[in-house]
Image (tube, rainbow, N blue to C red):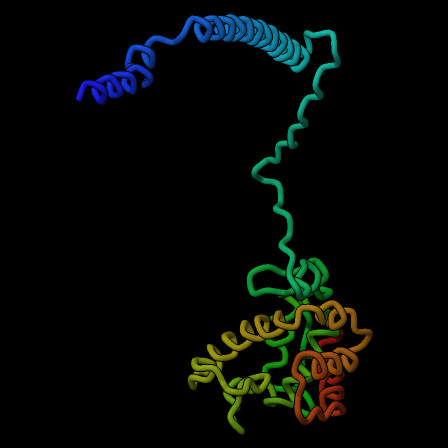
Length: 258
């Protein structure tokens, strides 16, 4: 029974004890000391490099700040150009659109007359024949709102064909001076004088929809030519009856001494 006890004790002696695991051997301690010394040297070198890098960065940013302010040795940074100041009364840039916009010379409105209007107030007299009703008021209104004499006579000639110049005219789903179809509410009320003024103002609005043709209308060489332009580019009538419109335009121009 004594022999097994000795074998057990020998096996325990051969197994590493806790103190060996906690306290490293002298050789291992020497290796750790060398590694620690190397780590210390590396950390010192890294610190030195870091200090040098910091110094270079500080020098760089200080030099750049001087250069930007114009006090360094390098060329000063160019000054940013400032946009010119625009007074509040300066006209705004015109908006861009797909269709030509009315201009001072080509888009008469009810409130402002273009510079290229008629040659003064027409002196109209006479009646009958191919003269439309209310032709004197029609021509006076159009010339006062910037249309040339020929253009005003051409438009009046078209009104002769469309309504006879009668603002109360109605028929075929339309009516009024230029035969609006459909006829807008409030254009024909049974008051010819008031309806005439309402419709003349509406003619300006209608014409502005075709503002790209206004320069040609105002530049027409004769009343008949203006009548042709108006029926073709503005009225776009299904039955042009161009000869009637031309003859009426010529009659208006003669009656108004244009």
